[in-house]
Image (cartoon, rainbow, N blue to C red; front, side):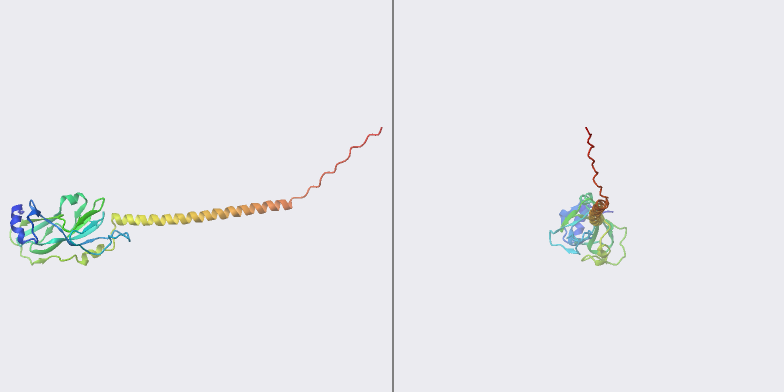
Length: 240
């Protein structure tokens, strides 16, 4: 059975750090963007967003471009009792902008630590977030009996084995657009070079044809036989 809002207000003070009653959202609790994020490269070499993991001061903003992945560490440390399980998601307002949770949808019993949300921006434009923004949700539900599992420690930072597979760039919308633009630029340069070469060839051909015509006309004028002027005869005079 899922925990309702009143139970969350009673229980979460010991289960979630920096608990605030105002962040109880009906039967869920709002988790905030924490101190560290990582956004996959866009594929554009000069893009300032192509950075390694970023530590965020309070209120610092960042963007997840369209078609890119992001790892977001939560501000809160979460504890899930052995007799419970938790479920996680993104708030609807961010989903409508295209942000999708791809990190899984539950937190195991006997878990303790920060959470890492893996998100993908499937929307048409960048999604802007900032540290302290309450954009994630967590629900708690009871198990029929306590789970006999070892304590699972959460995260204090985003591990490099998560960022490694996407650090080289993705075949995403932004990456593909960058490659298309780069190929278009190369093609335009090649076309420009070919057009210049064709122009040079046309001028060279025109000069060659002009030179040949000039030589041909000169040869014709030199080889033409000269024509002697026709002799004129005086008319015979008539005798009286």
